Length: 65
Image (cartoon, rainbow, N blue to C red; front, side):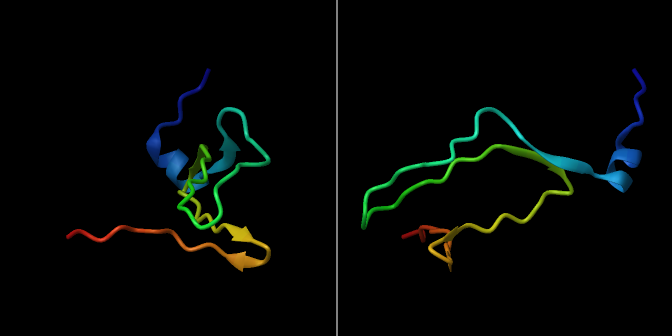
Protein backbone atom coordinates (compact mmCIF):
# COMPACT_ATOMS: atom_id res chain seq x y z
CA UNK A 1 0.00 0.00 0.00
CA UNK A 2 1.31 3.44 -0.94
CA UNK A 3 0.66 6.43 1.30
CA UNK A 4 0.72 9.76 -0.55
CA UNK A 5 0.01 12.11 2.33
CA UNK A 6 -2.32 15.04 2.69
CA UNK A 7 -0.81 17.35 0.02
CA UNK A 8 -1.35 14.92 -2.85
CA UNK A 9 -4.87 14.17 -1.58
CA UNK A 10 -5.60 17.90 -1.41
CA UNK A 11 -4.42 18.46 -4.98
CA UNK A 12 -6.12 15.46 -6.56
CA UNK A 13 -9.32 15.31 -4.48
CA UNK A 14 -11.41 12.32 -3.50
CA UNK A 15 -14.33 11.16 -5.65
CA UNK A 16 -17.60 11.41 -3.65
CA UNK A 17 -18.54 8.12 -1.99
CA UNK A 18 -21.75 7.33 -0.10
CA UNK A 19 -21.05 5.81 3.32
CA UNK A 20 -23.41 3.16 4.64
CA UNK A 21 -26.79 2.27 3.21
CA UNK A 22 -28.45 4.98 1.13
CA UNK A 23 -32.24 5.08 1.54
CA UNK A 24 -33.93 6.19 -1.66
CA UNK A 25 -36.99 7.29 0.33
CA UNK A 26 -37.05 9.13 3.64
CA UNK A 27 -40.34 10.17 5.23
CA UNK A 28 -41.54 13.19 7.17
CA UNK A 29 -44.82 14.62 8.48
CA UNK A 30 -46.53 17.36 6.45
CA UNK A 31 -46.13 20.74 8.15
CA UNK A 32 -43.42 19.53 10.54
CA UNK A 33 -39.63 19.83 10.41
CA UNK A 34 -37.91 16.83 8.84
CA UNK A 35 -34.31 15.76 8.61
CA UNK A 36 -32.60 14.34 5.52
CA UNK A 37 -29.79 11.97 6.46
CA UNK A 38 -26.85 11.30 4.14
CA UNK A 39 -23.27 10.29 4.84
CA UNK A 40 -20.79 11.19 2.11
CA UNK A 41 -17.01 11.25 1.92
CA UNK A 42 -15.30 13.54 -0.61
CA UNK A 43 -12.56 16.12 -0.91
CA UNK A 44 -12.98 18.97 -1.36
CA UNK A 45 -16.26 18.99 0.58
CA UNK A 46 -19.06 19.08 -2.01
CA UNK A 47 -21.94 21.55 -1.90
CA UNK A 48 -25.17 19.53 -1.59
CA UNK A 49 -28.50 21.00 -2.70
CA UNK A 50 -31.80 19.18 -2.06
CA UNK A 51 -34.93 19.56 -4.20
CA UNK A 52 -38.54 18.44 -3.71
CA UNK A 53 -40.91 18.64 -6.70
CA UNK A 54 -38.38 20.89 -8.50
CA UNK A 55 -38.30 23.33 -5.57
CA UNK A 56 -35.05 23.91 -3.71
CA UNK A 57 -35.20 22.98 -0.03
CA UNK A 58 -33.75 25.56 2.35
CA UNK A 59 -32.13 24.45 5.63
CA UNK A 60 -33.87 25.51 8.83
CA UNK A 61 -31.46 27.19 11.21
CA UNK A 62 -33.06 27.96 14.58
CA UNK A 63 -32.30 31.38 15.98
CA UNK A 64 -30.96 31.84 19.51
CA UNK A 65 -33.32 33.54 21.93
